[in-house]
Amino acid sequence: MQLGPPRACRRGGNAMARIFAVDDVPKLLKDSVAKALRPEDEAVMLPSADLDPTSGKYENIVFRFDSSERDVPHTVFSPAWGAGVSAIKVHGAWVDRILADPQHRQACLKKLRTLIDSQTADPDLNVGPHLDGDDNDRDLSEWKAGFDGPACFVGLYSAEHSCAPAQTLRGRDRCHSTSFLVVKAGAGQAADQFHARFMTALKTGGSLAELLADTGPGCLAAGLRRVTRAGSRNRSRILMLASDALGAPMIDSVPDQSSCGRYRAAVTAVDVGVNVLRKVDERKESKQYQYSTGVDATVSQGLLAMSNLADGVVLFLSENGDVRQSLRNEAYSSLPFSSPRLVSDRDLAASVVKEYKAATKRSEAANLDHAFIHDRFTWKNRQFSPTDADIEPLALWGSHDREGFFAKFARELGVAKCQVVRLRPMCVCVAGMEGGKLRAALRSMKV
Image 1 (cartoon, rainbow, N blue to C red):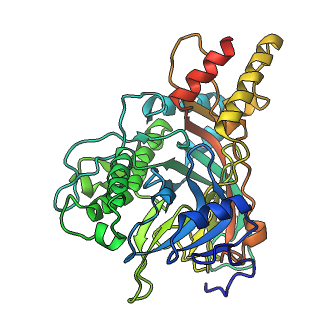
Image 2: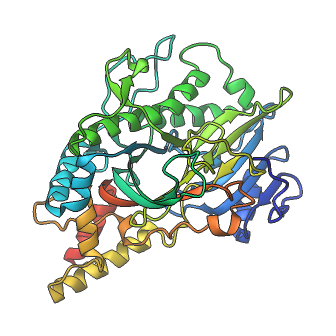
Image 3: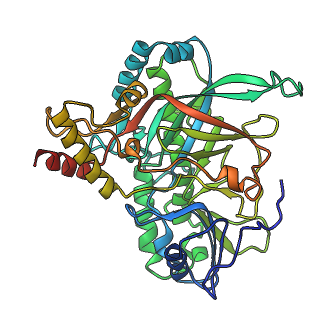
């Protein structure tokens, strides 16, 4: 659907670079973006736009860079290339059993924890494909699938939403139960390698057109192609592992052609990518590259946004209930991905330590939502000592707010007619706390 100019969009304070905002933006954030951009660049700040205090990177902002201009602003690029969420729709007796039987659900959580590798639990582990490939962008070596950061998760999500038994039966909408296997993860070592090479290349002062010129399998253009696909490939393989852990008899899968068929990958119904850099090709005369820290709907399959971890995931279906749909809006056809951050990891970790100390004196669980969390979630923390507390991931302590942009900006973002399905976590494995933060928290608890 085509929208007119969003009524909430307005010009930023920079007299040179073009900066627009769909929602009210803190002056500090607007000034930071204006300082980072060149006069020829543009940016749209989506709802929940932010500068993450933990990583120092922008979220829910879409940038457009003039590809012919030199000295590309390097501070806007996140090392989390290829990050995103993939999902497949599932059903059957195995799903019903997980939802209805708490003991079986706990057994499935244990299997998920065992089968899914995580870099947060093993500092020597590298997940995801290597950045380098052959002339056909195929892998040169084997690789492991798994979590590449503390924000990753995989598991069964369920929802009840209103729809007709068939798309052609209008006026017969009723409540249906729907379940999805959902995974959030990135490209792993491919992202780390590409970011290092890209940052080094940007320091030469060259333009994006020069740096991303396709001149061979080892060039940045080939690396960008591989890292963009690497996240989806890693997530597809994690879904295969999760289906085994949860007892799914069979899910649709295909050979991973980029690995010469060495692995099988799940056929995903939804695959959204963030931190995506691509050449703008809406117009033949275009000389721009677009970098999205929100959901780039042009290269994504389906539309999805995150709420806080305990609340779940927001899936947008078309007016007819289809997962696949096209999105057109004046925000460069993008949607917010992450929900607003409420507190930095450092401050939250200090608060968690206080809660654990107080709970020890009372002989109670530290987290107020302990029963719900341990019924639906498991996680993989690095174990420094057998007696250490198994601290819940910070996302389960309230690091992020729930999703709130849809009710206010659905029309401006082009999703007003979409069916909104809020997927709730039922049996989910989460990557644990980063090793350094976990070690510091455990030490503070012993003081």
